[in-house]
Image (cartoon, rainbow, N blue to C red; front, top):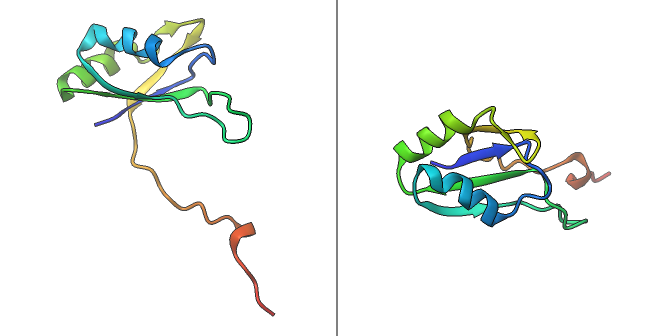
Length: 94
């Protein structure tokens, strides 16, 4: 399972997130997506831990918690829907 962490401060780093989630168990991986054009963090992250029970505990304790001046949104990440075909990508032939 992967944890979604939303409403993050733009100052948050991978190390910051590892430190917070380490209170609930061993953190396997942290991903902080950035905007392709600006390189700026997008305000959310994904965290993976070693055990589901640790992830469940982290979600329960951290969802709604205030951290770095923001109220976190923490839940199980949903599978990505990979349908990026916008109308600009569809070629119309006449």
